[in-house]
Length: 551
Ligand code: ATP
Ligand code: MG
Ligand code: MG
Figure 1 (cartoon, protein in one colour):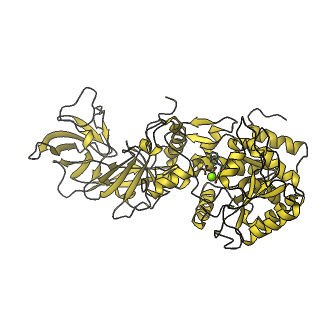
Figure 2 (cartoon, helix red, strand yellow):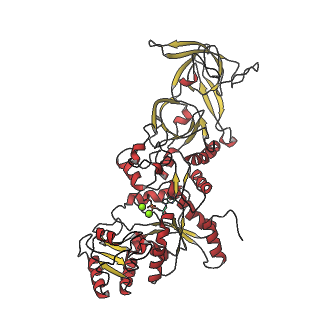
Figure 3 (cartoon, rainbow, N blue to C red):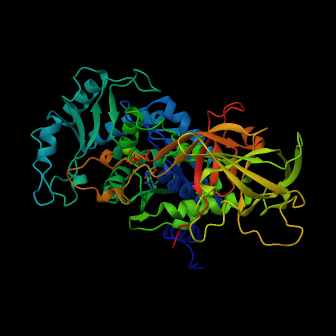
């Protein structure tokens, strides 16, 4: 049964199951533990775990830890946390390094079959001899070594007799192949490094192309889904599988990687931003990492929805970050508690307010969600409003506070601006108002229309907070469009973080725990940062209120 809404991966899996090629699907998400996961990985996670879920199969989390030089346990733990946070649980936790013995045996099998040889050329000589797209490769002078000599040399490489870089093991395929990957690729190299799991056991390590298909074969992966740049590696993937006796034959399929506007996703660059201190760690709210999005206030469900919306295609594309913001905003509108926060406070004194009177007003927590309940707001004689909400000489269409005009304080009273008090420099220091004490709750008793409604906080209980206003990390929409002589760091946006130190928030928000989410009325969605405390709250701007997606 054909389903028009299926992506091409779903079609392949559905067909394989229907035709009985396989009984059950097994997929895997195979990160190299050399950095934190980013939003591009989320696409791969949603696809691999999603397919397994949808077709009643299994998905493994596999650490592709074949390169000891860049891998660390810190990354392993962070990756597990992020996959779980995204809402997925693996059938099995696997490490490529658990198969090092088996890989080595298969390498020996290839040698025995005359399909691999030890090459004494150095990396540069090998690179040059492999030729180019227009120039065939040249055979290594060591290509025709006897099986016995190869077995002996590989054993001695394995035993640590030779220096790093002095010899490699290569597959013997075709130096004239039109596919450069097939020109006798290196399959083992000498690295005298400790591995984060196998310690000093090995001083030869397998290359990715050699190991990957075998990892899939060992784990019974049926559909090995990877990104498009591996398309040209598929013949090699299949060659290795065909030339040793694997327990099961997996197949590789390629899909387009995710690119997102205003950011970069290469781990090398993300590493560098962290190392140089350009950002506050891998989880800086401006980073495209899963933990960065989490700290910024993104939810796992919004990221999963985004991954569904972008779909799975065979051509690379650039996805607008506004689509991701849209998915989040839709969700937070229903789930985030409303609160009042004044980012740049201006003092307002209500001169006719009864001495020492503190009123308690009910305020709904989320007008989009009755179940969210309500809270009590306290108000007294002295409050703060947003400095931007006052204009001494209002421009046309300005319905907020100005001399002689009335505005509504959200959930509270209608007040009228009577007087502007200035400091010695002529700056507005304080506004003096009178309240219509019969307008409690915000409606005028005579039904007169009040156009402007302002958010506010009471000086008696507002808590001084730090608010981090985040923007895009980079100024360039498509970071692939960088000018040739420029470095990606030249495009860092100096305004990607604006810190507001003296913000005042209502007590219900000040009490937030890290990751608690709010809509600060008229400002946007915010999330309590990991450094927040009830005494000194810290909030991160998650996303603005306004939707610019598709406009
Ligand atoms: P980098 O090139 O930045 O080092 P990587 O692709 O090498 O990233 P891995 O840890 O090997 O990182 O990736 C694990 C899985 O996630 C791979 O299957 C890879 O294809 C997939 N993946 C990585 N980046 C993206 C992306 N931008 N979009 C979709 N899938 C991705
Ligand atoms: Mg990589
Ligand atoms: Mg990789």
